[in-house]
Amino acid sequence: MTGRKKRISVQSIADELGLSKFAVSRALSHKPGVSEETRTLVIETAHRMGYKVRSGSETGVIKVVCSDQHVATRESWAEILHGLEFGALGENIRLELAYAHDAPALRAAAEGAQGLFLLGPNNREVFEAARASGVPLILVTVQIPPLFKADMVSHSVEESAIYVAEYLLGLNHRKLVYVHGRRGYFGRDLRLREFRHTIESSGVDAEVREIAFKDDYSPQNFIPEITAMVRDGFNPTAFFCGSDGVAVTVLNEIRRLGLRVPQDCTIIGHADYPMATQVSPNLTTVRVPFREIGLEAIRQMKERIAAGNGRDRRLYRRTNLAAEMIERESSATAGTPDWAGALEHLKSLEA
Image (cartoon, rainbow, N blue to C red):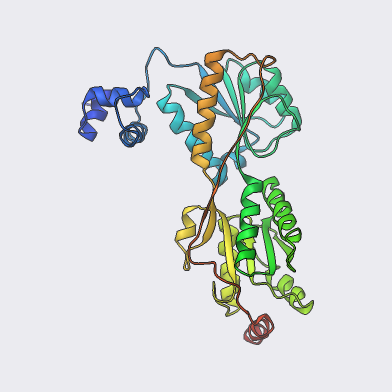
């Protein structure tokens, strides 16, 4: 005898949490009468249990379109996608993931969709095809064509870099290095531009140099680059990194040289991924509200659908959610690292 899979209902969720069916129903439909803490708990539990919303108010399918699978699985975009999924569950919105790197693929993905999210970087051809589809469109990315007629939800890329620059200057750092990690990410380039501009326009005698890796976790050129800087009389005391992963890579290399963090060198990451608190010292970093970006995009999509597209009869919004500086153990007042001695010591060990 084969057992049938039990259907998950509102009552099932209520039983799981020890709540009333009324409270669970109110939470899932985003109606008043329950606290935000309870609402979040109910939605997360429903998602975990595989509950499918069957309300008559459910929208048609909304497509989330990425250029390729690499974008969809990269940690930052995956976190935003999780926010989209979480928000969609609570708003009775059905999402489907699709891939498109050219106009024909975008048109195929948009077929039958009630709305489109473009998630992550893509080319202008895809942006234009998405707009031409005529359905509500929300761009969830950091780079779009100038004055493009669509709503965009992102985060405070430039503002974060300015804050970090001012923070490090306040700690008396004057020789600073921006570590890209792997090149080719627009957000990292934008942060470097604003970081450098803030340092150079501060009126303080400070300098920024940069290092890039072949891959975020492949620092083969870190020691050669630092060696060249030291020979040039540039002895860095602070590293602002393109991501927390890059920051961990830099931390490992600095330790390999026998230098201390933060006594000799300060390291600052970006994103506040779980790894930031899984290393010692814990990373000072910029916390990006990835999940909240997804939730805000869902809110705006719901608003657009309810109001009708009206794309030529309204202003288009650029919504940037503010990041937050999380000060932990990897940052301190500028030290006096003995780079020359550390490099000579490493050379003797590897001889």
